[in-house]
Length: 338
Image (cartoon, rainbow, N blue to C red; front, top):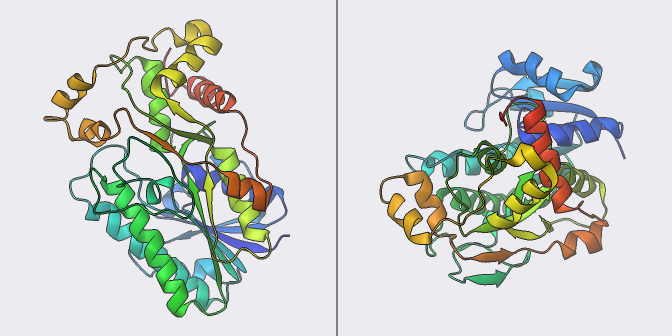
């Protein structure tokens, strides 16, 4: 399948790999960025044929540029959403643009006659607020935004996806909607503009962490996340579906062990000792970024991708390969000095 597709958030980590795969499969891509001043840098990072990629300036909180960006497109991949690198001053700084951006993308897509929208959500919209130390969550589950220790990012992804689904049910007409819900996205980087999940690897390699906190996350490769979006764009009979994109759940000590085992001397700054929970809890009293993590101490949130495997024949690569490819690209690009 091919044609013309809008990918929002073309300068972002996931958006860039989605664009590369779509163009590789014969699509012509329109993409949005907040300022066209970044077009040259994004083109250089993506390294795709210039005539296959068109840029439009558009923002999640304004209508300008959206009609032009989606004109002529039969499909939309809505990736753009605010992603914090640390704590935010107010949760609405994430919630409002995530929710309003999703609704704006849907409104303009319907007006342009788009047949299907694939939206990037997150396991953060599935597995939080349940109060369990160990739990297995599927596409049938939803984060309880009023539950214990639900951080602003999880709220933003949950409320944005719920708003999108409610809008589709009420006003979407014949336009189809599918969501992809990734875990922590790692893998090679195309530029210095990458997911905040990648900071996990940068901090381990740089030695900026004094120890290994007792928490973990599902690991998924950015190339596999892009592939799942593309599969969801073209598959028949999946209107309304959700697809978790995740490999295994790994504790920080497991990620560190992969780096030390496979990188040798390049991983010499990676910590080997655990970081006591009480130390993080005390630090969180003064550091709002650390406070975001303390609710995860000792918890396991398992989010298997059986549904994506069964319905879309999707298969993620080995988590160790993802971690090492991420680390090597950070080292090769000089993002991390080892």
